Amino acid sequence: KYTSIFPSVVVIDGQGIVRFRPRKFDSEILESIMTNSLKPYKSLPEPQNADEWVKRGELLAKNENYEEAVDAYDKCLNINNKFYKAIVGRGDAYKEMLIRESAYEDYSSALELNPSDIGVYYKRAELLSQMHQFTKMIADYNKIIEIDSKSIKAYLYRGNYYFSNIQLDLAVADYTKVIEINNKEPEAFIKRG
View 1 (cartoon, rainbow, N blue to C red):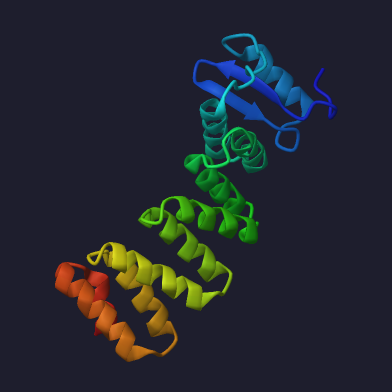
View 2: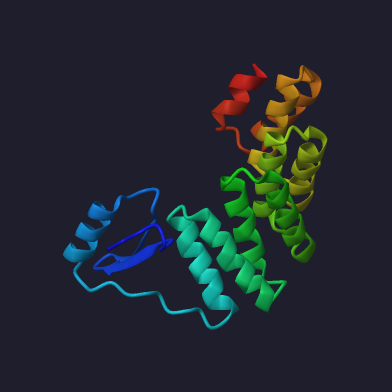
């Protein structure tokens, strides 16, 4: 029988690994799932190295098991504290759990290791917006534009911030730049108008 003593059960079926947690299923539903599984259930093998821990974290995050994903990324980082994908992945999991300060720290650590990763700058800028740290958010959009001067999204997002804060000259300048880069970008035409 499934009881609250066990934190989770893994069922391996024809689709792959599916993790069920007590708060999502009662014992009767879980027992039915295990009985009807194509293959008998078994525990996942313990990862043996940092790469395997990252893969475990990615799988858990994909299935929205963010707390367990953070644990897997932590185990990876205990093996290799500069494992870039683990740092970013853990930041993503923290962001999903609304643990924004930890997400910010991870994204910042990732950018120290790879200061040209535009994707992480976007993630951190979005997070900073949620944290109402708009000066730092603008700095991240500026950094994205410094790395890639044709980054339409950075100009649009920065322009949107300026527009919402009645800094219309700056907003119009950003929307105009987007139109110069891509004259088929409707949002820039609409907002500049």
